[in-house]
Image (cartoon, rainbow, N blue to C red; front, side, top):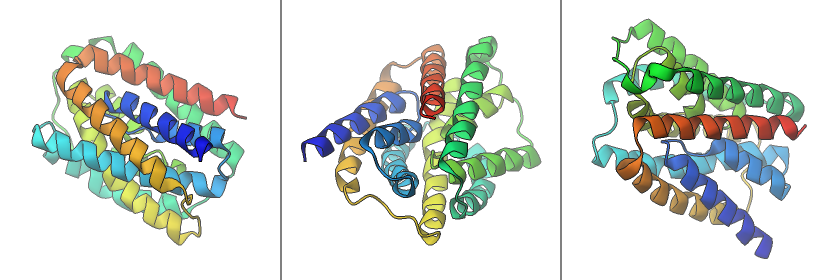
Length: 244
């Protein structure tokens, strides 16, 4: 029970940290569960459950504050949900999983740091076909990795000039929520199961999301949001690569 409490506290802490930047924490949830010794078959579905509850709360709060660009969200999320479900049905080996996900996260981190003018970005018009392609790719990665897709989506839409960092952070939780629900359905159909102690981890994830979302809405600037995102992505990517 004491070990479960420690894991719950760690999940709550990373959920708080990620929520300040509009993320949910799927990468860090996986890192914590790896530390806790969960089996590979339980890590992805458990991370997706945590994504659903944390992203659900963050989406509710962001909607109350009118921080979600719904028109852009649906253009990206609808195609992503189909590919997230397909990705959830597929199972990849642990080593390949960590290498693929870690490399993508590190690349995303450098994209965030190199985009110097993104803080004062002039938002461009979004083409429906490009939005659908971005959604489909990030949805597939979400289903394959169990991360949720927000860490892939945010750097992409910033690089394409579709949103400011704060607007992108507002899109991330509802996008993660949509993808994680469909990916979880695919994962469960593939035969993988959620860890029995997930109810404790859910409590930590929701509490962290509550605190982190409040901090992000009140005090985070565009530049601060971008730097926090970059640090989170870099840490998570290195952590996954070093786990090999």
